Image (cartoon, rainbow, N blue to C red):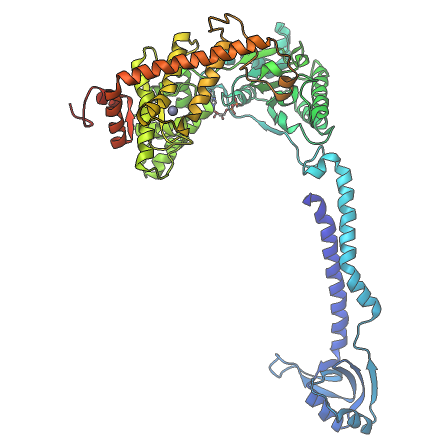
Length: 621
Ligand code: ADP
Ligand code: ZN
């Protein structure tokens, strides 16, 4: 809003300057043939009968000499003497009782002026601030109205800053690691944008909208940018959440803005991130911004339909919730192409790491494959972050290269949270050690569980201790036996606490949450309960958004709801009993593990095996 305010401010400033200038020249003119003289000098001149007349205003005397006198201005070193006919002087604050008599004796004309400034001037001075305030207010509200409803919220619907960014993309497919399928599919879009005429001659159907579907951080934005880079066209991007404002109509005008910008620069790509923010099915959801979203969506649809065949603009959009999108968006001629981007598997993770370490000096011991295998589930963004963290660690140690150790530490930090400095009493440490050892021992005993990568009782992130299991390879299917064992491992911590201390602590809270969610999914979505069988219920689903959940009909009876609860708790109970069985029978190993953990604080997978095999100190035996 300051862009609109500086003008009136400048005007006021100019007025003040002009006023000062005029006032200054006028007063300087007066002082040309006048001089300021000491009061004593004035008295001398009076005694010499050289005063013709004076005007007294407050303590200031202005007057005229009968014959002009010579004065020397201060600061000129006595060189600039001049004749003056007028003078000003200041009366001392002490009353000079003889003055009036002296003036009368010399027959000097005396005029007295009121010490107060003229009523007009003082009225003006009193009113000035109010005039300023009112003036600014008028200007301000006028510019506000000109900008439309969005202005009040600090945004601009049309004038002022653009909400979208446009640039020539510099990244290419070589900056995008892995995703060979996706690149393959998008190659066609590149061909089209590079040479639309040729593309149509060959008989290709011009692509209009491409929907990139995948979890956050998997490189959807990067890929869209790379398409623009490969084709050498301008890349317009905006996040759909920026369309949604408090005021109806703002979003629609932003959409219009974006499309007209892209049309001018065609061939070009428009990229809309988080499309689900505007693209949710209409008529669902409620509360503020609902009408606004519909208007914005309608505008988007009509812009996409309104493309002329010769307007070579491709709209790409990203979402991780394709299921909530309005069907109208997916119709032919709109986002009819869909490119699914999965989390990278370890091979892709290795190549992502390679891309992001291109400029990092790596020590010879760094094996990116090992890091890639140890980071299942991480996205490209996570891996980029990992490399970054490792480089920071190296810099902190003044190391010229990033070593494998730096990479491992960075990985731990991201997977388990940063280490936290906090004081734990010996007792709390013991509880934590038993809790974590419980997880470890159950995991070690049960077959088919993910290998334990590391266990620590150094507080990290939100947890007092962490047991980290990593799958050997990325998993896509989970058999019931695996899930049951997993439940036992998670409950192992709580069971160990109860076994040893006869009590359970709040430390197991997060474990319980995970357990409940997992058991609920097993029963309601994966049909893993024998009593209920192969049915799926909406229960336990991640709900797309609040409005839908409340509006949703319950598709099962009260009896079924009761049965579901029974089955969930039966599954959890079974898993807990299994964990207890294991820990009771291997109590001695549990104690061994705990003392090793208390002594060493962190144990990696190999060290855990050593401890369980009865090796006392690291490196020995
Ligand atoms: P999304 O849009 O899917 O949320 P981004 O495209 O914003 O993800 O990705 C975030 C960052 O992660 C990118 O800037 C990039 O540096 C990195 N990244 C993600 N995937 C890859 C990949 N396949 N190859 C290289 N870098 C990647
Ligand atoms: Zn735990």
